[in-house]
Image (cartoon, rainbow, N blue to C red; front, side, top):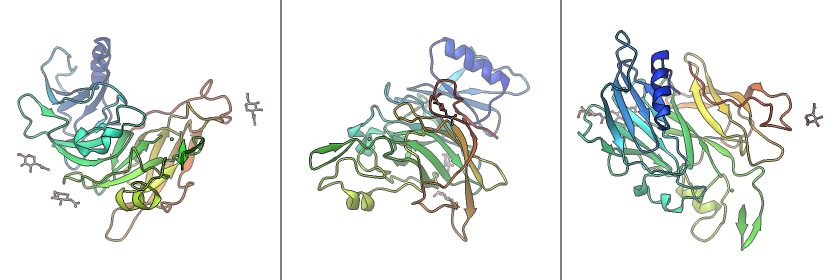
Length: 309
Ligand SMILES: *[C@@H]1O[C@H](CO)[C@@H](O)[C@H](O)[C@H]1NC(C)=O
Ligand SMILES: *[C@@H]1O[C@H](CO)[C@@H](O)[C@H](O)[C@H]1NC(C)=O
Ligand SMILES: *[C@@H]1O[C@H](CO)[C@@H](O)[C@H](O)[C@H]1NC(C)=O
């Protein structure tokens, strides 16, 4: 989440009444605001002196052509050390979006657009910009550590089918993920495994099984309890903590999630910042805020959504 002022909040309210689903992001130069709907990202000039921003002010579509359906958030992030870039996250069109295995569909993907040279009609999400990774079912947040490298949280899905035998394993599978993206300034078509390779393989066959998935897809850097529904992630500047909001499950008994956690990080010599816990850990985080009794969640429980510094 990127912080926005009360003036931009007014913009959100008035756009919402025009039935546009949106999120608002203030560029790090504080002079540009971006808002995304399911299909389009717009920008407005934002002058903190002349504020408030008005919806009737001139807006320009900077990215369009995004899929009009499915997982609907189109989170946009501006890297702090690279404010000319806009990173736009695009979820899948269904629980299992099989065509998204082809990077050219540009769904379940993350793409990057250079805001210094926007085409007059805006970038087409599918055919322009560059990839920062794909095979990510429902990614909602992406954040940068001090070295400007990106981490993101992803919600995954499941039953497991082995030799035609279906077993319901959805209570604890597949895990939610924290993925390391690295340098989004350069094109990268790393595949993170969705819709076939999760922390376990849903329906192992000759093409996709535990071994081939290991070889072809980039594994998460850390896994969380299935159905926790991570929504937002934010590093606390100057600290070694990544805060993550878990919105909580709708499809699990007993319910799970419904809390704010932090993940301790460390700086490794000559390398990226890394979670302290090894990738195989499922206890790599510390609870900060949680409901004392989750048995009847969501009724009566708080659900964490966004976090900002
Ligand atoms: C963005 O576009 C500008 C102008 O064309 C160019 O100078 C700059 O190198 C580009 N940045 C990236 C990361 O591609
Ligand atoms: C990221 O990639 C860009 C473009 O290739 C390069 O100029 C920059 O040095 C890289 N940054 C890091 C920290 O590796
Ligand atoms: C948690 O809530 C459930 C349902 O209201 C209740 O049955 C149970 O006793 C509670 N557990 C504790 C430890 O309070």
